[in-house]
Length: 402
Image (cartoon, rainbow, N blue to C red; front, side):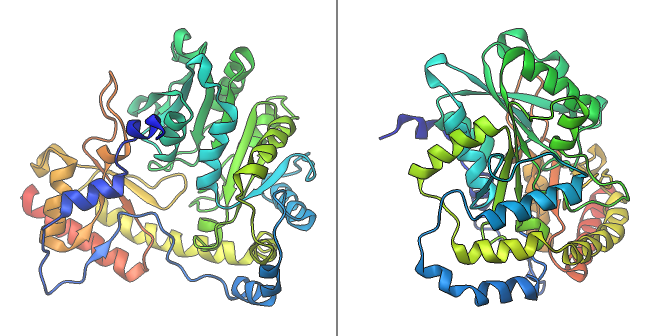
């Protein structure tokens, strides 16, 4: 048995189930679950039609590298989304079966466990980063988001003894759960550190297409070009259709960047066996080629955040994120419930609304647990249900505030 499995922590939703076990909310209210970041907007009809029109693809084994047509469609999308991107679809793009498995398996390619490496992770963070590090034989090093930096990470002051042993650094921009987008200055700091110490940057950009202002979130490939790294050395970007196109069950995404890393990752995946079905590839091509449905999807989220954010702000300090579909809300002392876990339990018991304790998304460091005292609210359901949930949260919190 792989002994590294014993190092894994319980997943946040497992902890949430245990936290809420045995609690019965009022029978006369509809339960509303805002704890899970699962898109619930309808899958566009044209994607379903593309799947059905290509069912014959199920009769063929897929190639690990994916079709040239899919890789070309992804390359075209990158240039449409981020401006001209000098990327070679033959050597710098690889389709993956969802970004989650790719974020995990990529670490198994990059890490040399014989050197007792570090993997630097944001804190709070998407839990796959930690699992990938631990099962890759590395030690996660968590860098807390700070209020001084607006939730950003102080990469410039990472300890020398950590940097010298770092082999992989995960970035989530737009962030989960904060929704914060890294600035060009922060990217330049990361690229300079990567060049000096030789570590690889894994940029998770799965929330890049859900944003609320006219300016689109800056992408890692864009930032690399602006920093003079036009070959994207030591950089791999991870993207997905799940949230962009409302197809979380289709498991379709891609990685792009450093050609040498892509080549090595392809070798690993040839044995790992996670190639994308030709049927899913065909539907993915259709999705990457269309922006109209993405704009419609974004508008739905904008409407929800426009209505829900001011409601939540009446009782819990929060702000409109740069991007993503989460509100990251602080529980003020005036509410009188110190622990985010207690707030979550009491809220569910009183209202039937489920949120996720922020402490479940972070790890304790010398600076504390940066998720403690926060809750993550996923605005993924219908506008009506999200507003109803927000109103219940306001009534619940107001009871304590008064």
